[in-house]
Length: 442
Ligand code: SF4
Image 1 (cartoon, rainbow, N blue to C red):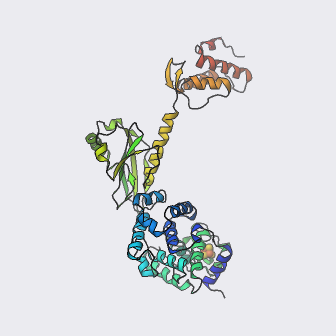
Image 2: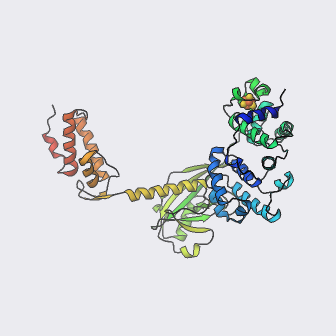
Image 3: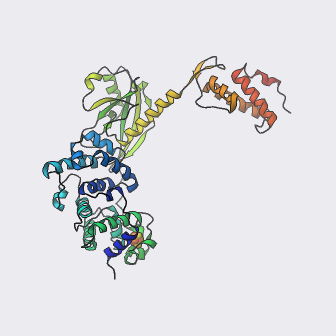
């Protein structure tokens, strides 16, 4: 009878993924980068990040020599930024303490920042075919189902039990393939909510399959109510399309990333604004609130945008950790996810402002904000678009509704439609709606 690992390897030979970017030109550096990126992130998300990362930092020396902002910029959007900061630190350690060569044993590998036992084992196994057992999230799921291991894997006794099983099931030969295979099986077959047991080579051995309760494993993390925290982000924007950014301290939440000034509450934001600008918070516009969830709390963000003149202290404040960023250019640094969202909003608002057309509106007899798109097909529509404001268009729409209700007009009746078109032309481009008085419906 085939062993656990033999079945997994037979399946891998036929169905496993063998063409992922990090499965080419295999070396410890490439495997290590892919393993860190793949923590809590899906393969298809990681691929473009990995490719770009390798173009910019093709080896550990290039990564060690890069500045942190550049590294974080390559990580922007992947989340869990501590991974990127740790990688950067680990690359320096490899260069400074290991002469630029990744260590070849588990203990030394685990001494690198951000490298735990399973990651260290995966790097050694995949890059050098060392016999090492791994236990990432996918493997935990497979093992806990096959062996019906009760309890949440975050609990130390459950974790220990799973490590023992991981060691017992790891083969002496083809270790690199097995490591890829068991991770692959967890990611593609033994998925969290809909395991494809019919295609699984471990079906006969799988206790959870036999019990019919696959999704009860692994045991869930005991629910705890996450604290809710609140913050105010102040987006200062000047007429030159620049926004004021501050770099976060290197450790802690969003460490080393660029953010807007943040305050515990509105009162502190007001005080800061009073002290630094001749502006009051009443002149700020509230943007839609955001909620960002960290692993241990929810953060509710109230963004406020304030138009300011170039600040009096612009020259003084532009240290390494503050800057005025021109939103029409690319940002060179790492951005926290909600800050990226807010920057996109500010950019969209800018585009909207730019699209606003001022027109000489006949109806209102003044310059007014014009329509953003053709309102009506054909020449008449173009004429309306060129000369009419949004306000005038809206008043026509209201007037048209009144006409249709009052005279029981139907836009699919050609006579009614013709009448409405003529009325529209008079209302918007001519002398106003008085001609309607002469209309006698049939
Ligand atoms: S039989 Fe189903 S639950 Fe068991 S390991 Fe295979 S896919 Fe997972």
